Length: 472
Image (cartoon, rainbow, N blue to C red):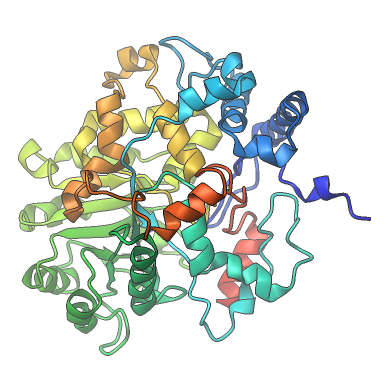
């Protein structure tokens, strides 16, 4: 008989790169492999002590706190005090109530980068190669069952039932491949029907060099905005190799957005797809931002992934570009931290603190947007927990002149900034009425933590990434 404990994950969240299919994940580092082993051992021990299964403990706040504590230990970081980046005590790992007191402090959360896959694709079986579980526990399941994990239903379950996310923005992908504009609108409407309130919004996906008549061409923007209800624009400058400050290619797109009342332009910056778009390392750079921000002062521009380049160790170019703008124009520039925050955190909590500290110093707490790139990373709850816990250590603040990451700043970044840009009322009633099937499902499973699958869904290895790109 198969040992069921083998089917349970050993860690509460992925500990190395998870790609969204746009960039190639790196192999786990030695420290990440060590973290996975030590976190698994620590959670196993504590689960037995509490008379819980391993999966139950991993889904508890104490499981996440234990993982944070181990990350600090591996990287030689302070566990408490003003010098800690991710302050967690052993008591908060051992005591279930203490862990909940640490992590279950709710803020309004609005995630501006969420994705799933349209399972009505001609051949959704192309995703069967992905090992959705940490230990391959899904490999024996039928292909049709496994691919469902990337679709609408599981997207709703992981993002809206299995996390504190209040509002999610369904974000576009290049050429609408995997997630066409119509599907984005359909998923938004499904979420809002289930919730009985506004819990999801969608963007217009535009490729300005796409042939007229295609689903993401410039001439589709009016349909996406007026018929499909898109409330912001998403674009990828590496898809066709163009720049935001190109007056021939980009400016007609910006003019059409302005005509249609769209004021927020979101663009993928950083995280290059070097394998299949060799020029992307150039075209995802942020050097086009100063001119376009100056030329279009009536628009807001958001650099998705905050211009983060993993192989270059950060987003120094974006920081330099942002600082080159005078304050009156810099207020129109925003940074979204989907995947980039996760990548820095898994390299070291101190690196995540430095990443956020740079953005705070350069843009201020009002111009940073919360995004996670989920469902690829699984439930975003571990990222929410990490950001709520994160501090900018005092020595780092003193050395680099970073401001503190205050509770007020966290509230802005986690949701209030996006609410302001997207016209969402953060005080609106959500998950409180009987018609809210999402709230009922969350309550039935024992709260937002209890039903998390602890899976990640994006490619974890170069082989998986290449297989996705070849078959897609």
